[in-house]
Image (cartoon, rainbow, N blue to C red):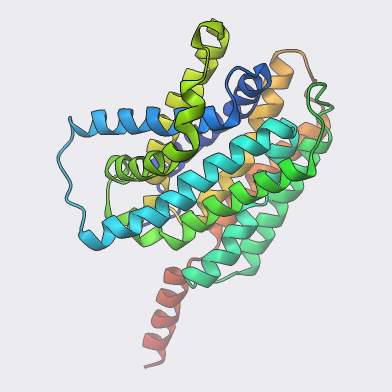
Length: 312
């Protein structure tokens, strides 16, 4: 495993760019009102479930041990079920800018939980990298000049987004060994199966009551993006990054989301790209770079062993 593995970084960069696009797209669907937060969470689960199981038919079969089948259940609860429900409900009642801001605390949570679960050291270099990235994200968000006219900030909504972020961070760190044992398709087909089954008692009766004929083509297209791009494709790509990179580095890609949101605002004329945004973007990617240069526990132990060998 190397923190500079190109496949891992390419997969995460793509996934988090698509996640960044997902925030305004999903917000537009929820604001329309025909598809609620409960509906959206269920569509994401069952749509990705069907896609992953269909894809698995064309790939070599991978046997999952009985013990790991049990572990996949809490992994699904933290990585999908709790994460998606709290995100959907939170985004529906708060602003997209607030949602992007709160997601940037993920790397700090990851750094602390990785130290707890994986015994990863909190080095000065790693801490500095995280702080640089946080500073860039805060500068970007507070200088973007975007004010939601449809939905103001909401403390309950922000707390739900924070819960969503924490839930996914727990998944990244606590289930890192499980993630590394299987391919992304094997992991996700079982995790989405568990999440779909768990969601049925909460969602099925509501989905049945939807008047599908009243939903516009634009809302359907946006929903398809959320389900098959921001869920199926992104959850296929993220485990690739998890296999090759440390959880702290994986979570650093959260900072890509506010960058994407800012670029969208510039392209559609909602904002201009001034010097503040240039500095903020530079800080975000500098933070990612600094964290990738920090030493993992394995690197530190190897260096210590090398020093001890020289002494002998």
